[in-house]
Length: 163
Image 1 (cartoon, helix red, strand yellow):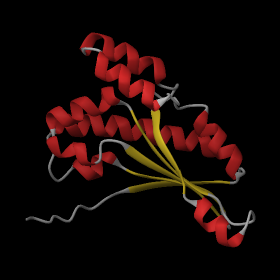
Image 2 (image 1 turned 135 degrees about the horizontal axis):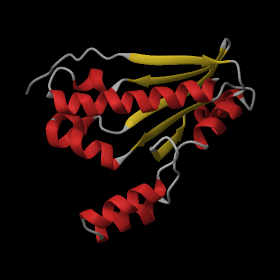
Image 3 (image 1 turned 90 degrees about the horizontal axis):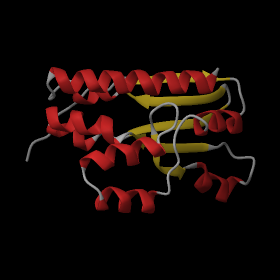
Image 4 (image 1 turned 180 degrees about the horizontal axis):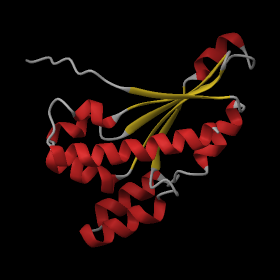
């Protein structure tokens, strides 16, 4: 058994917009496929068709939502509707994940990205842990190039949603 410490870089931006506006801004830029249908379509098709299937469900950011966790729901159970809101999105693009995984097998442990949208006293915080920082200790330059491009896409998405 081995344990490694990996330094992670966190990108964060704060918005003065409402939580709902920030989430709507993100939602308008990422795809929201029916995941059950998407998984079935991927399983039933081969490589040439796979690219078309993925492209159909991507948003303008070239990302799609895999799952959403309403973290604030637990807080609201105790504190009521006035409690702060917090959502965690797991998003990505299988066509971006594929070359990262091919060039750096450890990329599979963090290939989908996590975006946190968290309402705080000073505004709505959007945070993202950079993929390149996860891969830097054990990936080759090709995987890092793909990860940096993904980081750029996500950071542009968050910056636009916050503006």
